Image (tube, rainbow, N blue to C red; front, side):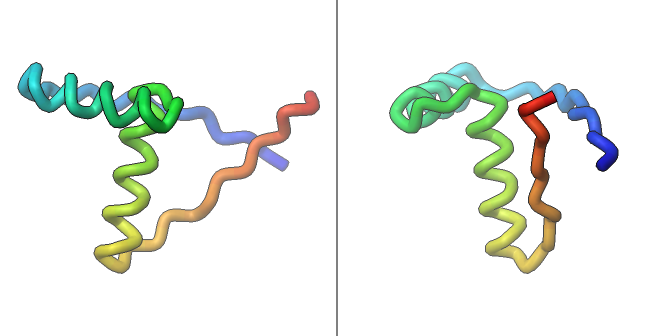
Length: 60
């Protein structure tokens, strides 16, 4: 199975938005990056956009 590398996405947000995101991520014990990915996946699902699930082989 070929593993796909993650890619970088740079965005600018208001400091209050970042703090809100950080608070939510902390409550769910997630990193900011993981919280953003979860939110994007949920929004896409809600909008009818399919994103394939990613599986990783952690036993390399």
